[in-house]
Amino acid sequence: MQIDLAALVGIIALAAAAPIVADLVPRTAPPLVVVEIVLGILAGPSALDLVHVTPLADLLSQFGLAFLFFLAGFELEPERVRGTPARLAVTTWFASLALAFAIAAGLEAAGVIVNWLFVGCALSTTALGTLTPICATRATWRASSAPSSWPRAPSASWDRSC
Image 1 (spheres, one colour):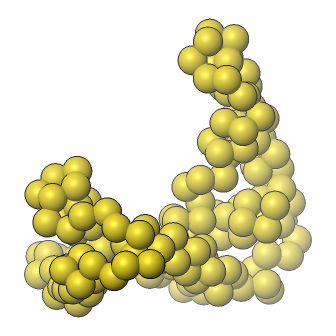
Image 2: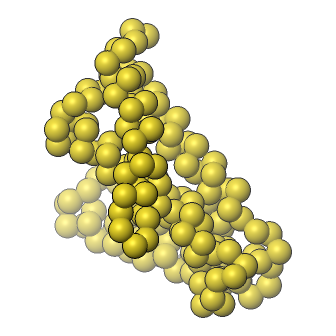
C-alpha cells in the first residue's frame, strides 16, 4: 500500500482539531464523534476536497468505524439491562426489525431496491451503534440520567449483539 503523506497529515490534523472545535461551540459542546464526522465531511471530497480518498484513508475510516462500534460495547451496563429494560429492548428491536423489513419489502415491490432482506437488515441496525457512544458521551444513559432514558441503552446493546 502506497502511503499518501498529505492525506495522513490531513487526517491527523482533523483528529487533533476536533476537540478544540468542540470546545469552541458555545453553551454545550457537541459530542466529539459528531465534530470528527463533520470535519471529515468538510475536508473530504464531498465539500472542500482537502483530503483525498486513498487506500490508507479508506483503511483508517474502516478502522475508525469498527472502533466506534467497539466503544459502543463498553457503554453497556449489564446490571441496567436485566429485567424490564431487557424485555423492552428485545420487543422494540423486533418491532423495528419488522418495520424495516416491511419498508424494504415495499421498496422492492416498487422496484426501488433489489434485495429486501439486505436493505431491511441495514435499516434496522445502522444508526444505533453510532448513537450509543454519542449519547453516552452526553451522559444520556448514565446512572444519573432520567428513568425514561433507561430502555434506550439496552435496546442499542441488544441491537449490536444481534
